[in-house]
Amino acid sequence: STLLVGSLALQMGPFVWLSNVSVDDPLTRHVISRFYPQIYLCAYPLAAASVRRLLTLLRPARVCGGGWAAAAAGGLLCACLAVRLPGQDQSSNYIVRGYAESVLKGMPEGAVLVTQGDTPMYASRYLSAVEGLRGDVRMVEVDML
Image (cartoon, rainbow, N blue to C red; front, side, top):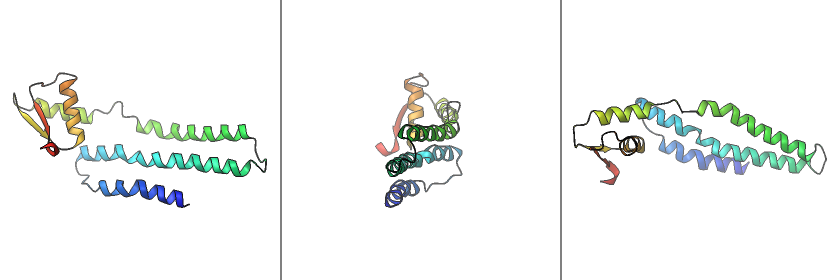
């Protein structure tokens, strides 16, 4: 119980504090939706620890066989992943790429692009460095100034 409350407080406290942003902008809303599942990084290990503890309690009573229980726990973990994974697949999501392309294509030749935040900076740098889009545009992160 203390472990659960402590873990949730440790995970949710900074998340809630850092997510105090306006969700009127579609790009911001998308970025927040991508980071929301981080709570599962805390929840799944807690669930595994709970199953392990339950198996430890049941083992002396010989309520169920160790191999069967381990297989059931593994199956439960796989079921959780199978349910959640399709909703997290972002392989066909091109919102950030389209945004960065629009910004870079609209810049005059030899311009300096000043960005704020990781998403626009990394997307613009990727398109410029890897795909060769607008190599003449220089990019500066506002926090680096």
